[in-house]
Image (cartoon, rainbow, N blue to C red; front, side):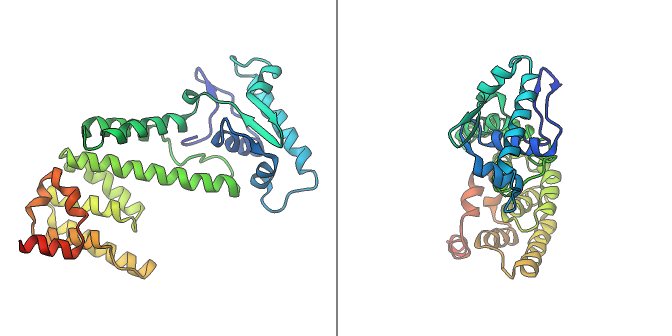
Length: 274
């Protein structure tokens, strides 16, 4: 699901082609091993305007999904497909093993990677990088989505961005700032109001001897925040800005960088005076 929707076994594709069936499959997969009520299915498929035949049409889509599942060799029959996609009281449940779903593999790698952050950033970066490599574009990029899926996708995309920032933090602590500039420049352009990415780009540029460009990032961020949201940069950004202006030596030490970025402007001024 981390990209176009694909239901595959041994390289062969068994994904349904009908849009509504794909939409229903995506909903069931995002709630794998849990009962999804018929009401939730109908809301996802038709939003607030379901047809009078919504329930019988939903049952037809479930039957078509079971026929798609039957084609998968390890399932092999409609009877077995009914055990994979069960009718439960008031809804349906799709049974999936953890290693069969890329979202589950993503979450497992992220959990392991986050456990290593600051303890062993090289391992953390590797694990988080493996998790990010599972993404092949935006989640469910070729599936039409209704209100229920849309809410799930917002959470998935936020998880994706959070993991990217954490992996970049680990790489910055490992002194990989030169290697990060291209990636960060792209991300900062794509997400111009995301201050975490902007601060990481500022730090990578500064450590790479590009202090002027690091300061330009602050100027651009301030303009974008003001024009689009009527806001000023956060204390974290202002603190980092002042540290770059002062060429604070703490910026050159990866192990100390994170604590510096957490300082607000007043704390930074006190630290500099002392």
